Length: 569
Image: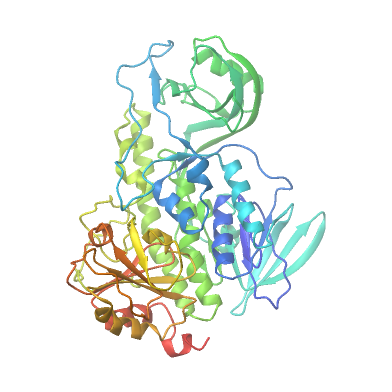
């Protein structure tokens, strides 16, 4: 959970925000990736945070390990390259006939995507949450921010002015005042419960799963595959090699209604016995490092905030781990909220902007629950086709339906169905979609150095206005209009077509780029002879696609206070 002022996260984590003049104290539980991403987003926006974690010690365990391309893009914008650089490639799954080491003839292949200039992160990366926590905390340390372990949120009250929390540490109570609070404290967290948000859905006691980290050696099982023995409809075990656990380390999953996972979780010996009974191979066990049993819960809140308090990740929704979407969606919750909360806290945007956090994320999470539940249902009866869906890459997730995006090229259609979890298709791009990348950009004139890709421009503390124009002269009216907004929150880049001669005149643009290979014009579906503007939000979403300065002003009127006010701040 997190606190604006210092942060917190984890399965139970919470965050509160405060301005610099307030006492820097906070409340409650856990520091996992979702809360840490919220904190890092706010810190990079210049907003101090306080992070507290109920657990006195950092949690161990791989837990969710899959990071999809949309999340890798998020981490790229936050300047956290380690997950992509150090994460392992996904291994092929090898299924076996029940009770034997004979592989099935056609094991399902993990989903793949062909390399694409607009999608620089096109592969799934594998990294344990325990390692990701350490990486994110290292980035927080650059802002002199750390997680307060063993600090519990007991209660909180809020008013129009702020939040008063009561914290407990080592038996000592502390009262802390904050302006905002973000609860990343998991499905059992106190924040959602005290807010009184509904958490409707279903619990499936028969669909239990036991997962954990284990160390063992076996000559009969290679480390080049994820191995699955048995099935979900009866009993089974899956083993994923993990070098993070050790050279003999594995992440295990025990499943099937014939096995009492809660009972097995009570004893390391029972885990050994269960795995041995399912795998006809010689195994030398070392130890179980961590394990946890849980039953399938499929639930979500009716809204993601109440007043000055917000919930993100598992504090707002829980679902089947099938498809590996949960941790990814939680971090995307945090990123969506973070830049909006920062603008409001800076006094640049009205509090109504925060209402779009629920408006944008609720449809996404609702469709997420449908997808992961469908995969679970298919797995139970032995089908796996949905697990290969390109939707799992999360590149088609969009906010086309949002009231703060603006597209002057796609007329609104009354009653148009929301498809928030759409599939990525490079032939289409609308306001509300993820912003594509484009490599091999040539920077000319003044401005920041070494910008070679569009993703190199996007950061969580400012909007990026891409002006696609035949020449700098054509871009000038738009650049002049942008002077009304402070460059700390709005930056501009003129993107010239490949055939343009390199200009040597000064420009009002923060950057001038030549699209040498045409990747940017292609990805953004721009015509080389026309002037068109794409405004990229701090979360890497296309906020607007407009004709010119008038459209840019109309879009920013949905985000900021009056431009004349913004420019004086």
